[in-house]
Length: 125
Image (tube, rainbow, N blue to C red; front, side):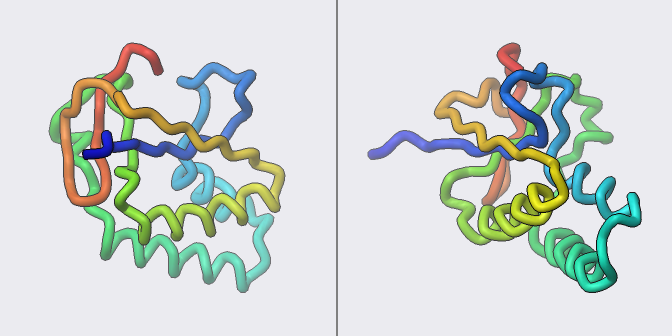
């Protein structure tokens, strides 16, 4: 049986400290709020947010009071979610926000898991 692979998308370059990088959802929200998007792209961002809110469970970060070391990773089997995130990545990169794709087989101690993602605590990040 193949070992699972986990995937994370972050905004920033490989020269930046990992903790200083943001996730693509936060960065997409900041881009939308910047006013730089034309109306049709702002509408698409809202559609993406609506779809994610309906389809991607939200890990209980607030309720669990996890440390800042708790990081979300997609499971490599979450192809529908990853496709949506790839669309987000294209949009972010069009507006000068570089996105890195990070993969690992060992995300750390898993604190939360659903069908699409895990939240893991790792000292590496």
